[in-house]
Length: 144
Length: 145
Image 1 (cartoon, rainbow over the protein chains, first blue to last red):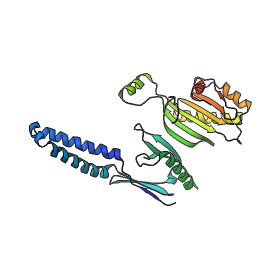
Image 2 (image 1 turned 120 degrees about the horizontal axis):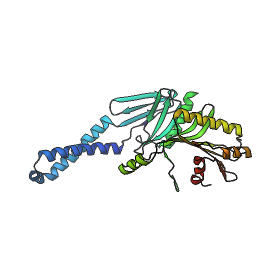
Image 3 (image 1 turned 90 degrees about the horizontal axis):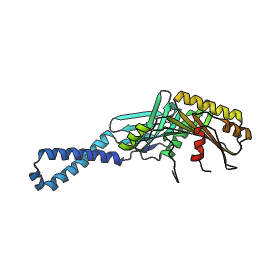
Image 4 (image 1 turned 180 degrees about the vertical axis):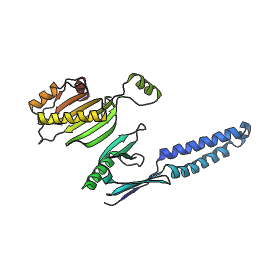
């Protein structure tokens, strides 16, 4: 089987980080600048905050929560942000399930003897229902 | 989901081809009876709803497969053992097929386990038989054939 590599931007996570940075910057401006001065520079200040929150948000997103996923018929590798890389082979797992979180995001859960590992299918923009069956097939193939 | 839905439980996890001992269920869905949501519905659920662990087992038999009373008893024993192991409070077991003998239908109708509801759907004759427990009788509300 040819390997699949996925590296899709999760817009909700990116938006959350950008909004958090914008709110932080806006709080600093509100505390540091007097309202009468702010009125004079309102548009440039808000524009600057918007531009920097988008730029910093993108950097923070790539560094902290962007997911890269690679899988083939032997196993898979998942990288979160710039640091954390986790890899497993399909043969380590014996059971597959589809799990829905409270945020209505789906993950494919892989059970081994010692616990489980979740592949966040919705965050990777995979069709969770199709992907579950694909993983079921890969586990069957790895057991042979 | 298409069409009308009826709230039964908050099912969070689904398995396909779930094996218990040497038996395989086509589908197993697991969840609990506590509704999630925003503040008020969460509070309402916390105060009024018991948080029972629930599971629904589905077995679909094709036209060649035949299920007898012995096989039914093995499936029920497997469900009960899993319920004990996984601390599941309530379970439903739905059997769908076309070749059910009168003995199996009677065995299902006579079941009265309070923690397990069983229903047998004969897709050929469009007939449904359910166990006599409260959970079994609930199937009549949930399933429209």
